[in-house]
Length: 116
Length: 111
Image (cartoon, rainbow over all chains, first blue to last red):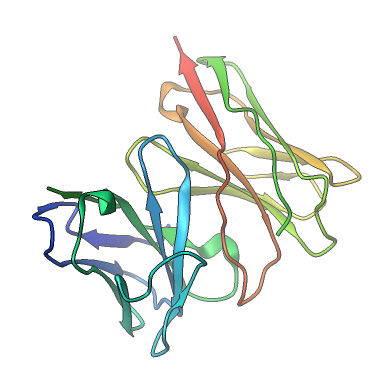
C-alpha cells in the first residue's frame, strides 16, 4: 500500500514552546490530508482536514490558532502546536488521500508529543 | 455519518476465526461500511469496505446483513499479530467524506 511518513516520531518539548510535525505522502500526491489526535486508551479524534493550497477546515472545538496546519504541496502537510502545554501531550496521526475514494486514505505512523 | 456500535473487547484463540460485529442501524443508502484496525502505537490500517454485498480480500471478509443495519468482520485464521483495536466506520464516499473513529473493539488473540 501507499506510504505516509511523519517526522518526528516522538518529541519532547518545554511548556510554552512550539512544535512542528511533518506529514509526507511518499509515493502519491495527496489532495486531502487529515490530522488526528489520540489520547491514551481513547479513539482517534479528527482535528482538521486540509486540501493543498487551501486553508484547513477545523473540527468543532479545535483551536485553529493553536494548531496551525499548512498543506503547502501535494506531498507535505505540517501541524504546528503553538505555545504547547502539558495537556497538548498526545499521539498525533496524519492521514492522506489521493482522491475521493475513502479506502485510499492512508495513515502515518504517528508522532508522540510530550510537553513538560 | 451513521453512528456505529461495537463491543468494547473480544478474545480469540490463535488459528480460530475472529468474528467482530458492528451495528449501524441508521445507515443511509449511499453510505459504505469501512473497517480499519490500529495496532498499538501505530497509525490505523485499512482492512476492507462494502456497500451491501459481502466482500473478501486477502486480509478479511465482510458480511453485511440484507437490511444493512449490521455487519461482521471475519478474520478467518487469527494470529497474534491480529491483536489490535478494530474500528467499524460508516460514511458516504466523496470529497466531504471523513473517517470518524468510534471506540472500536479491542481484539486480543491468545495462544
